[in-house]
Image (cartoon, rainbow, N blue to C red; front, side, top):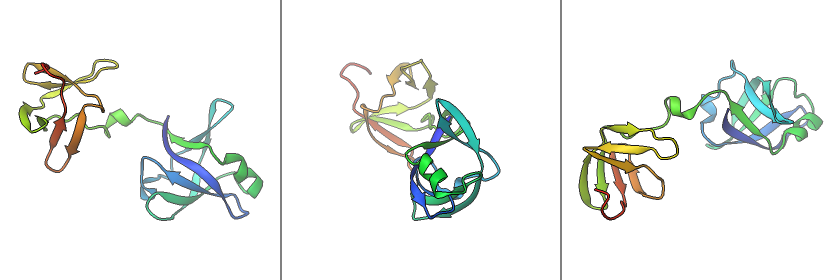
Length: 154
């Protein structure tokens, strides 16, 4: 399950709720597919019957079977999830990007070695740990990744 929003508060008396979007835009919400809200450790499916964007990171939604203020209040604070895995298509593996260690050119990323718990970029003969603490900047338009690599790694 992938969290896409959090229910912030009820909105009105007809069961509408205000959500804060975390990973997607309101226009990307698919009303024909169910979303899931966890109750007692189990995902319960709901369909979204109406979405009204409120700025770029919030929306007012109406979930099927949530028809009262009382029902909506019970959802406040819960996450809205969808089925799937971000790794399917949303994660960038940086293949083809140019890698820099600070200002020093390292090479072109040839791929990703997905070692569990320690994904590494393949650059020439080297495996470079892909860890957020090492990344200084990433420019998707120019396809440039700047990292602060430990001494002696390359």
